[in-house]
Length: 111
Length: 113
Image (cartoon, rainbow over all chains, first blue to last red; front, top):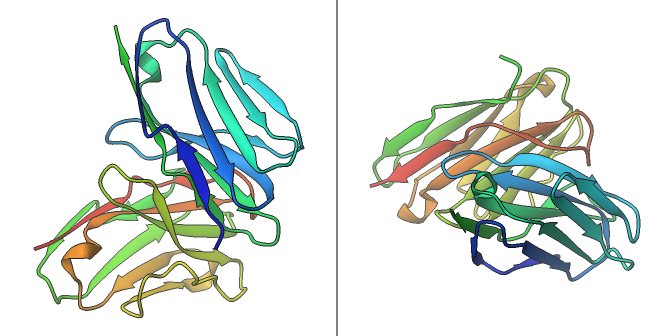
């Protein structure tokens, strides 16, 4: 069945360092979404990527969708303590309306 | 409120009991999703509703799990004869149309003793 793999599972960085999380799908995706979940909270939508090779930026966050629409990445430049949380990707299959969530990358930022 | 509302926020019950979890999506959102999140884990898809179409139940882990969505709005997720492995946070999300950003509720934390 369809799966979305996400790595790494955990990342501990010093404030100011960069951070990247990667997602890979076994099949082509129609689109991919990224969510952030703060400790004790619920996932909050960050962005959606639809086009092959698409790159979007939100301040210090850069999101990429692979050319084959099977992988995606989220890169945070110069992390801050407010970036702490778990980042999830969610891929939507080409023929279905449901989303497959990656297992998440838990980011801890040391001040 | 304007967000997705879930109730109860916490539920503790004994093994073997039935539980019913409720989700009130954002008004006008046609797509509704249920997910399960175990401690420190990702989100496991359970079921998806879209308008009046037949739901996609492919993620339900066993026949003890069922869900309904009445009138295209409120949804209930029912777990019969609960087991300890059912303990998790059950999250509901809705979106205006399928494939659009999902808005999540705060979840129901279910604990089976």
